[in-house]
Image (cartoon, rainbow, N blue to C red; front, side, top):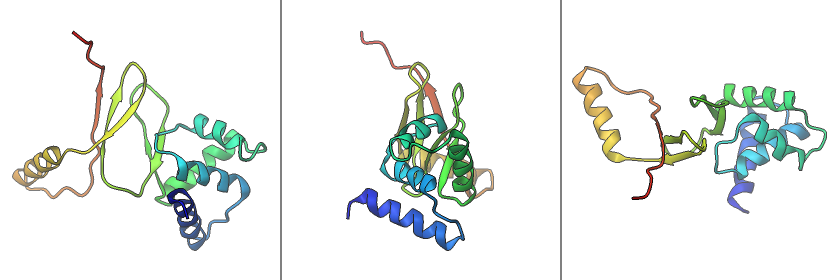
Length: 143
């Protein structure tokens, strides 16, 4: 079984366990999410879903994304300057760098940043429960 097929099966199992019916449009959306490594917005998900289920509507995509977010299956990111983007909630923690010119979202992980955040929180008397780091930038020009 491929990694994508396993992700799809796991999505469906968790949602059924939570009492969610897996309809054909929902399955199409889950399939897209299980196969993607990027951060699509609702319109991109809709366009990809049309090749799987030509009867799907944009409103179904929006409702399903809200349902998946409420169930903790996906995370919504409201990056500045663009529409909300989505990614799978499961997986290793990472932060994001958003290219202001292209809208590309680059995932990265820095142990140094994680340690610095923990140190700052401790110094201020806090334990970090959750955090999100988004950096916005432009690609350097070659010299």
